[in-house]
Structures are given as C-alpha cells and as structure tokens.
Length: 264
Image (cartoon, rainbow, N blue to C red):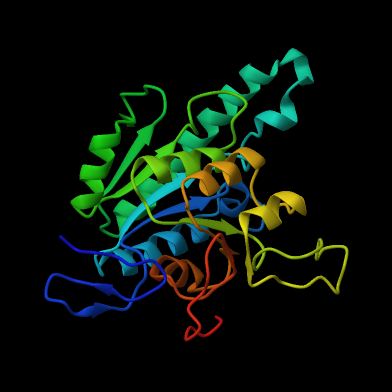
C-alpha cells in the first residue's frame, strides 16, 4: 500500500519520492465558476480546462473526487420565498441543478478519455449511480474520477458542506475549493484595492473573522476531522493541477505550507 504524509513528499511502493503531497483529493467546483464569463449557464471552455488538468494528475496516480455546485443554474437560498417557493423546495431544485452540471462535466471528461462516474445523493438511476461510500472509494482506487452531485441530499445544507462531508467519508486528505479569486483576502478585493491575500489561516481565523470562505457548517466539519482546505483561483491556467499536486497556490486553511515550496 502507498503511504502519504501531508505537506511532504509521498513515498511509493519502491520507496521513491513522489512530487505531490496528497494521494486522494476532493475538488469543489462552484456553479458560478462553471459559468465562466456568464454569457451562458455552463462554459464548455471551463469544463474542458478542468478535465484536462484533472487528466494530467490522474496519470500520476492521484485519486480525484469532485463536488459540483449549481449556482450557475439555480441557487435555492436566493429563490426561497419567491414565487411561493419554500426553502426546502428551492434547495431541492438547486440539487437538481448540480446534477446537470455533473453530467456535463462527466461528458467533457469522458470525451478526452477520463473514466468518470457520477454519484447522486438521491436516486436518479437512469442518469447516475446512487451515492454509496464503498463504491465511490473503489472507483477512486481503480483510477476513475468520481463526481458527487445533489449536495448532501438534504435541504438547508450547501455544496461546501457536501464537499467537507464527502471528503471525510471517502478519507480524502484535503478539500480544494476552486473559486474566481486568488484565495482568501483580509477584506473584499472588489471594494478595497488594498485588500491583502492571506497565505495561510487557521480554522479559528476563518470563523472569528467571519471570512467568506465556506459556510460555518463546512468549516466546522473540516476542523473536526482535521481536513485542510486550499482556496485558489480556478480561472488561472494550471492552478487546478498545481492545487491537486499540493503545490503552494492560493490560501491554505488548517495547515502549514512547506517552507521549501515556492508560492505559485
């Protein structure tokens, strides 16, 4: 069996060092990120960029699971109370939106030869597998990319929480949160040009300073299970593969960067 030491070089069966830090990762891709320049709900250039970078790291033997959001199509929390929609109904519609994104991403990945499985939190057997933890892990061990859709299957929980939950369940070593900004800032860079990009944070920093990274449930779940979170910019070419390989990119929450690693 291979062994992995977080934030250091891993060792393979022959005792040789491998140039990446994590053996199994959970990549969270927001729906807004999939929309690209927002001229359409899903930008095929974005999904193809994700597919190619994931392909480049799966060839190294890294196991990749993905959780997709659905905010590019429908965000339940925004629609709750509108047109007589209660929050639960709105959230279920949002979960269906994540399934649409997952199937699109799966089709893109398989078009370039990446073996992929979509698993949903509630049954949609005609288009995807139901989420079964042991089956998901087996797919990963066989080198397949597993895309988790429909969030946790429950209303009132975000897809960030789903990412933290699935990460803990499949024993992944890190949550990689792909966003449209370079990482976590000490203030909103859209309104404050002097906002500073933060290199690393503790879980307590995120909660006490009310930083807009993940919702409180997701951060707490990561903290309780000692899961580090890397927040990075999806739109910069190469960032996905760098983050998956464990290179220094974006902001690290709940861990410490290697002192020898160069900031990307």
